[in-house]
Length: 325
Ligand SMILES: [Zn+2]
Image 1 (spheres, rainbow, N blue to C red):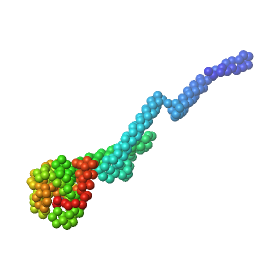
Image 2: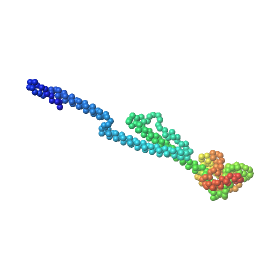
Image 3: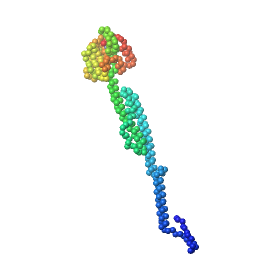
Image 4: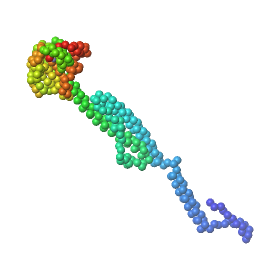
């Protein structure tokens, strides 16, 4: 409300009210409204641009972002656990499984390798939270790759285990005559005197004496490659090829129980004790070949002898006596 103004009228000797002009009154009202509008508008702009006042929508979005951050934190902790478990499996893989099967350990760099070359995370760049999203994605990518490498390694181990089982079944590992049937282990591998000429001569196998007709057993899995008497001195003999470079030979048989080409398992009956060929008494002359060389069979009885029996055999085999050939 504008103030009421008066003036002195000398004619009437009294104060009279000054009546404002109508146009001026309207102009004042207009200016007042314009001022208010400008002030209100400026106020609104200031309000919207200050961070300490949020609209309800902003508040709700902010809550959501905080929730996402929390969830990311939880996901990251789960990844920590996964990485630990995976590292543990990898450690066992390198230092136990692969070691046991004589496979080279997988180098750390190969297991942990990220992805080089093009930037795979370009699409994730340029947002407020790009960094945590890219970090998490990178970690997951590496975990995924590590799992693929680990899985392949375990496939390889499974194959090696199968091979090893086959190898262990194949290598000659038992005595060709069972201990109950054995008269004695008569002569070992090494320099012995020849039963016929009495001269010192290399004896390339082991002699097991047993009564004529005593069963002779295959010392490992394999295939019969010979069952004949066409090899000088051995008489009726059987040779079994075990693979992996191993061949076993059983001499002086009285009778065969296998034919050439037949597959045998360790412990299968392949023939009977006799004294055919260059032999002085019924016995089995037993030889083991590795890659074509005749080696000492004494090292191949871990499948059938106790430690004590082995000690005893070792003592007998080392006596420099006369072989039965
Ligand atoms: Zn012999």
